[in-house]
Every structure is written in structure tokens, then in C-alpha cells.
Image (cartoon, rainbow, N blue to C red; front, side, top):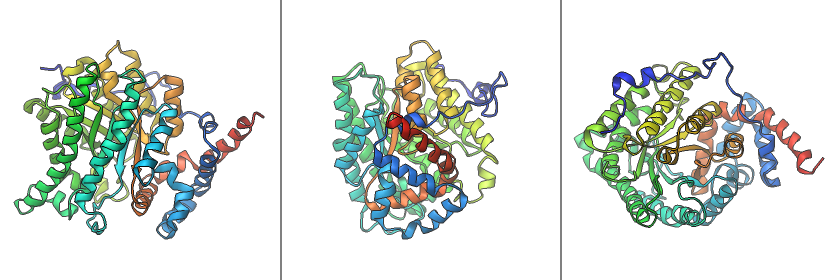
Length: 449
């Protein structure tokens, strides 16, 4: 039995420094300057970022872009935007994206085939669900597997982050909104079973590859690859996705297995997220499997119904909740190692404070290769790159991944629009005028002036 904390001594007693000020009254650390990172970029990417800076100068510019975005031709979007935020349209382009990331010190990716239909309003007939499953499995073998094997032969085996495949439940069953919302309704049993089967097919492939690679590399502490269930909107998450995650955890994360193969996602801007994770921890302990966690702040704040009731009222509440929970999970992994029921953690955040909190916790602990290998820092491709660069260059972080969407141009266009809508404030604060000034300051240094 692990030393995992019980309900009485977990989140309530693991309060950490809040984003407002730390215990010494010092203000929060500022995100690192972008100039050093910008100097490393090729001219094309610098030009594209300049365009992003102009487009996000203020709320009016950004909102205008969002309104016009559906009407902008795909070739224009591909030239100005797509290559910054998307891995490509096919395996070859995504493989090249992975190689570019490796040159920056980012060892792996979380791949996301960007086809989804959480509203149930899009026709997926052009890309049938069976084809999505087949294409996703193929991407595991043709992108993630060679990406990690090439590094296993040339780098310390536990310095390489796992490769992840992100599964959108809303892309893996017909009529997804109704199926997920009515997940426990017997009337939807056939479709529910089909969703479970589709996710299981992909995750089983991951599981078997992990077991096979572990025989060749027995000193590996983290999984080689991981199947990741992405979050959906609250009503779908609450009614269906959480149960789907539990089913997959039981199948593919048994405590008898050295490596976990499945991770679920929790959105910590939800008021009930802390209690929910404790509930999931208890279920894992009782049923003999491990949790895999990808912890995000949240991606649907502008489209959630009743958001005032389910989401923290301000950013500070979300930040405190996020830092408290990641501290709880990181400490549990550090203390209990392989006995922790938190089998794996992805800290998916653009927030420098949160990323440094985890980085410093890992630095301050005695050597615990299990925890250090199974705690991974992640950001979206094209976002918070100054944070990523700082973590790698100034703090020696090796456990870094980027979330890499890829797929048909029309679908990646929808992904980009959703990022602008849901992350508009983050995009504007990261980019806009500060980005334009940083680009201007980086140019003389690039030419040696």
C-alpha cells in the first residue's frame, strides 16, 4: 500500500504560495523575456510572429480577426499562422516538426488529430470514425514510435519525455454530444460501447508497445508512449468523459504493470476539481489501478453554460487551485515513487509560476528518478515558447513536451479559431505590443549590432 495521503490530509493541508505573493511577501516572478528565444528563430517564423503581434495588439484587432477568421482562405492561414501552431497535414510534416522541436531541447510531442464534434453539429462523413481510429493508430507507429526510438539510442534513457497521443472523445463516436451526455443511459449502450472500444483499440496499441519496449529498455521509469483523453465541456465531462477515463485506467493502468499507458484530463478552473481528483484517487486505490493526470486550467471558459456556478470567479482562484493541486500530486510522486497511485503527471500550462513551482520542487528533492521521469511539463505548440526556452536553457528541464495538433487543413483551421476564442486573453498578453517590441529588439542582436 502506498503512503498516498487520505482525504483528511491532502489538498487542505498542502496549501502553497499563491500567485499573488509567496510566504515572504515577494511578488510573483515575471515570465522570462522573449528576446533570447526570438533570436533562435528562422526569419520566416519571426515574420509570422510579427503578424501575430499586429493581429493581437488590442481587443478590437483580436475580435475582428476572430469574426473574419472563418472567411479567410486556408492558403492565407497556412502561410501566416498554421506552421506556428500546427504540426502539419501529414505524417512527413509532423515528423519534421518533431525534429525541429528536438533541436530546441523538446524531446517529445502530444499529437492531436484535430477532428472533433462536441456540439454534434458537424458532419464527420468525410472522415468516418473508423478512419480516425485507424489514422490515430498509424500515427503512433509512424510518428511517435520512431521519434522516441531514435532518441533512446542516443540520450540517457530517462531524460526523454514520453510521446503522447491525444484522444478527443467527441471525435471517436457518432453523435458524440448525445452519447457523452447520456453515457449511463441504457438507450445509448451500443454507442457508448463503441466509444469505449475505439479508445481501447488505440490505447491497447500504446500498452503493448510500452510492454515490448520495456523488455528492451528495462531501466526506463516512465512510459514510452501514453494515450491521453482530452477534456470536453463540463456537461460532457461530468456525464461521460470521467467514466470513460476510469474504464481505460482499469484496463491499461493496473498496479501490476510497471508503466501506465493512459492519462485523463482535469480542468482546474472548475470549482469541484480538487474534490473530484480526491474521489478518483480513492477509486484507484480501491480498484487497483493508477491515475494518469493531465492538469490544465481549462479551455472552455467562454462557451460553458452556467459558468458562474461551475468555474472559479476570478483568475486568482483558478491559479491557487492549480498550484495547490499540482503541489499535492508532485509531492505524492516524490514521496511514494512507484507506489504512488498518481502514476504520471503532465503539467499542461503556459503559466510561468506554475511551471517553476514544479521545476523547483523537483530540484529540491533528493534523487527520485521515478518522479522526475513521470512529471512532464507541457505547452501548446506556438504558445509560451519563451517559458519553454527558459525552462530548458536556464533550468535544465528535460521533461518538456509540446501539444502538436495536425490533420486536414479545414479541421486545423477550426482548431486555430477555437484557440483564438478560448485563449484570446492569453494570446493578447503573450503577444500584441510586447511581442512586437521583443521582435524589434531581437533583430539587431541577430545581425550582431
